[in-house]
Image (cartoon, rainbow, N blue to C red; front, side, top):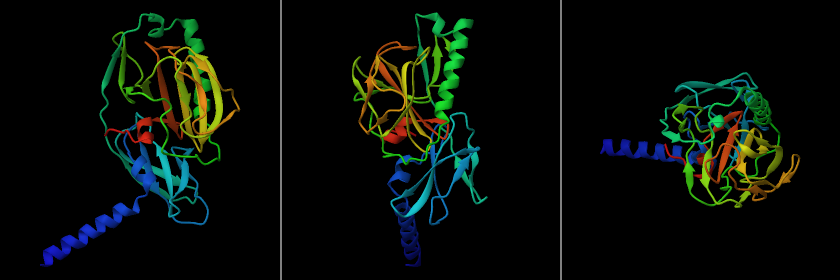
Length: 276
C-alpha cells in the first residue's frame, strides 16, 4: 500500500514537471551540438539579459508564466556542462548532450568549387566576412513566431549537420536544411523580419538574410531570383525570391540556415521535424 502511494506521488511530481514546460520549451529544447537549449530564468518584472560565450541570447516570456533564454549551440561544441551568464552576475549551468550526424558524398563537375583558385579564395573570404557580420547582428525586436513556417513546400533532401565530402574531400559540415523544390518555387519568410543582406556568393549563389529579432537570423541560398532588398521589412509568409541552383549546387533546391546568437543550429527544430 505504502509503495503504491509513493509511486503515485512520484508520478504526480513528474506530471507537474512536464506541465511546467510550455510549448516553446517542448518544441525547441534539444541541447545537443547544433541544437538549442531552453533555460528557465529567475523571475523579475522586466526581461533579464543573458549571454552565452560572450554573445547576447534570445529571451522571451513563455506563455506569460516565466522568462526563458533560447540558446543556440555550435555544432563543434563538445558534450558537457555549459554556462549562461546573466546581467545580474549569476551563472546558470546547462548540459549539452551528444548527437551523431551522418555523412554525405557529393560529386561536383566544377572542380574549382572544391578547391578554389587563389583569386577565388579572396572573394570567398570577403563574402564570408559579410555573412558573419550579418549573423552577428542582434536587434531588440521580438520574433513574430518561434514555430517557424517551412519556407517552401516539399521534402527535406539534405539534413543539418551532415559531414560533407565533395569529390571525396571532406569539407565543413552541412550548416542548414535543404528542401527539394522546383526552380521558380516561391520562397516565403518563415517569420516576420528585416532583410539585412543580399548578394550573389561563390558557394551560396543568390542569397538573402532575414533578421527575425534577438539574434534569430535566417539565410536562404541558391535562389534563381531575389525579390527583396536590404532594409525591406517582410511579413511572415512574405516572398523573398525563387528557388534555383546558383552557387555550389547540383540541382534546384533551397538551402535554409537558422542562426541563434551567432551559431548555426538545426532548422528542423523550429518546424517540429527534429530527429534525435
